[in-house]
Length: 42
Image 1 (tube, rainbow, N blue to C red):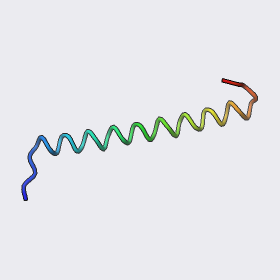
Image 2: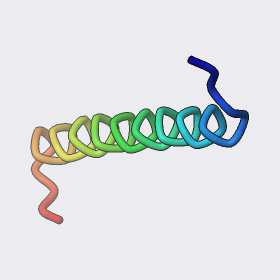
Image 3: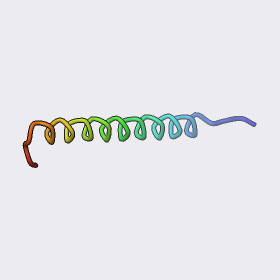
């Protein structure tokens, strides 16, 4: 079973984008928690 370079590029892009989405979600959660702790309402 051979994998074409296009498939490999698409797979890599999918992994990277899901990683970025996960990281931004975690950063947002931490920021909201910090704001709630300091009493600032968004």
